Image (cartoon, rainbow, N blue to C red; front, side, top):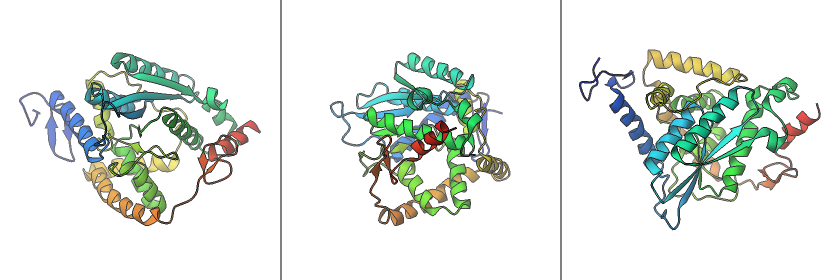
Length: 321
């Protein structure tokens, strides 16, 4: 099959659009959509100048999504004096798996000459995910612990580096799955938080002491297209699933989403289009009622609605084993 735009062989067929694209036009399409999302979400404020640059911290795990994101951001903003970028990698302490992905992060950062910072659960919390999974005092899925610890480090170091935005590599499949989970759980308040945290525009939002806003420039790109782009660009991505991944509900949603997309191409895009509108309405509703004064955690000083944050309570349970 030939490319729709030239006489080269197509490398990708997008069932949701009916399009066939060759390598050149496929890569250009991915980059155009990412840059379009950056413009639509107003990531670069009008007052950003070389004298008043923005600092973006990129969550670089070494997987295909974060590697593709970092590559496109560097291609787009590497020469731009208005934007300063820092790649932040977190080592969870998963033998074999994370060591290889950290190597991919180091290789990419060196290739593009981007500042790269590496932090670990072991150095920061005194725990490794391999040990957490073995002990499991809260009888939870590994992802539940890891999500809390990862979020804490991303937010803490983004704040330490003076980030104006924290960018993560969530793709279309990730976001559509999260949207469907929130809908099926009837969690309207979580929809509102999801919108304010990472789906809304940044034009009227400033960095606060309590919150570094997130952005997801890949959220219009299907997962398979991210993987194909990484392959075609020969990027040093570590494409292997975490051995401790065990989010049962999300796994069921993933299977459902794949089946729906196969039978009804465009389902993911439709879900996100409707969800974002609903989430924005929910955000408008909850902003007025959600002025909760955040306290400083008694253990670590991070912001929390309780006396002790979730991370510290989990660490306390682990140390008591």
